[in-house]
Length: 136
Image 1 (tube, helix red, strand yellow):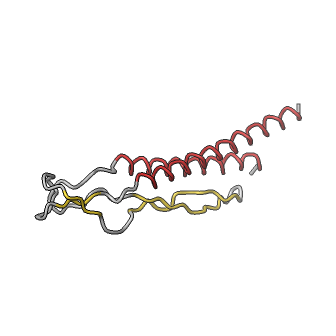
Image 2 (cartoon, rainbow, N blue to C red; image 1 turned 180 degrees about the vertical axis):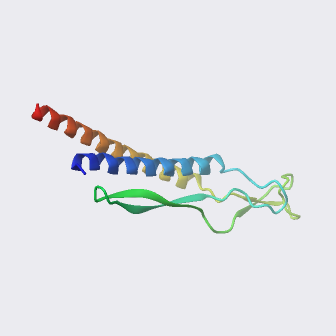
Image 3 (spheres, rainbow, N blue to C red; image 1 turned 45 degrees about the vertical axis):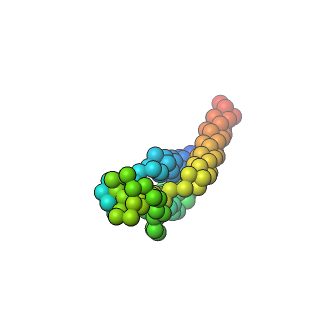
């Protein structure tokens, strides 16, 4: 495969992966206050995303891809809210294990990575265009 096409393919795989990461972060932020509806029910559990390397045999380039979207394990914090429908007999409700500050940091990192891949994509496109101009 043409090396300049490889640049575009690699950058596109990076943008796709970071787009998926932003989607997971947005789901976490949207559900940060989602609690169960019945006593003792578990609230929303934070989603996590993992990436892996994928070798594109046609170009020999290493691409990035989403390997898993999972759930963060661990215990939920308890908040005293006896009026909530999901409160246990002691008046405590499990709250999601979503940390807004962590999600904001993850969002910024994903956005910056997406922008870096977009810049790489645009640079590859400009290089192709300059090459065509030289060959005229």
